[in-house]
Image (cartoon, rainbow, N blue to C red; front, side, top):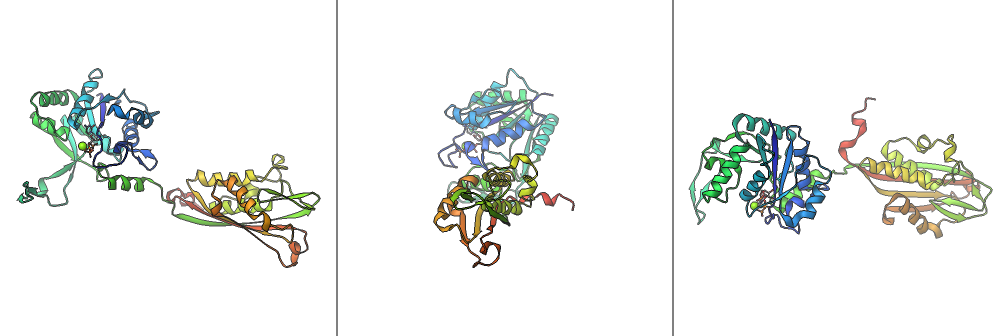
Length: 398
Ligand code: CTP
Ligand code: MG
């Protein structure tokens, strides 16, 4: 049994407003049409997907369909949905599928299970549509808004797409409707009904809404955009001893000084503390675990790569760094005059605005090793936000 799908995407989306037709709006970072096409192309029961588009949207269409298999060259739609479906049916003539699914581009939430039900019901009944019981009471009204009737709710269904039909029967029914001047039918079941066919209703899906108004697009975008609600704070601490040299690296900045800092890498205590703070927030080990001092490849390494690595680990988890706070602890060199240059360095390394990066400095009142000018200490905190659903510890067994 050969099954093809038609996706009607030629409408102008006038009720949704906006600069682009609604099927090209981005929801959760992808266009509505791409999501719809990806769902249909992913189903193993569908051999080919025929898109009906508006030629004005050619460039938008190319961007939406890039890299998807099973797509046939798009064809231009007509003045209303019925005309657009008919164009899709004629474009499939050379393929001559047994079953055709007709689906609205504006329904990106269609599930694989619903597609499977549609194919099965279409094959069994020749004409089958997804429907849901109506929960509101429905009234018929006249032009003046006066109620003219209350149909029994138990006998009503709100219907959706994908609707599934015998290809030959749907094609013939559309041709007959056109010939008889029956235009403006809003779904394909109505075209089949007008040709005298029985249409079976199967179970639809509440999530399979047709994006129609601006609020629908906003809701879809919010539902598909991962919420970074998992807020975490990590801390880091590091110390390096003074040694021979003429500068110290602090927060990625070379500061001229009468001594240097000893260390395996460039001994940048500030960047090391920040790296550990971020790794701490991720529960992802520490700097030594990722860059072992025993490994010769990190000898003399500049520490910006350690911090950039930690920032990339946050991005790889779908998260963002919200804030970094670094405190440098030493009697000398004076950090204050370099504070903004250090913030700019860190900003560059982690790709975060300077407004989210704090650098502070303090002495220890000549107490302890920093007070005796034996070295520099740094402490840092990092606040990060991760998506809720990617917490690996929820699947780990301790
Ligand atoms: N459609 C189509 N050709 C048309 C009209 C509609 O292919 N001439 C498609 C739409 O692109 C949409 C589906 O049919 O995927 C359902 O139509 P609807 O939700 O009404 O979309 P629009 O017609 O684009 O929106 P509006 O009625 O608000 O202008
Ligand atoms: Mg419309």
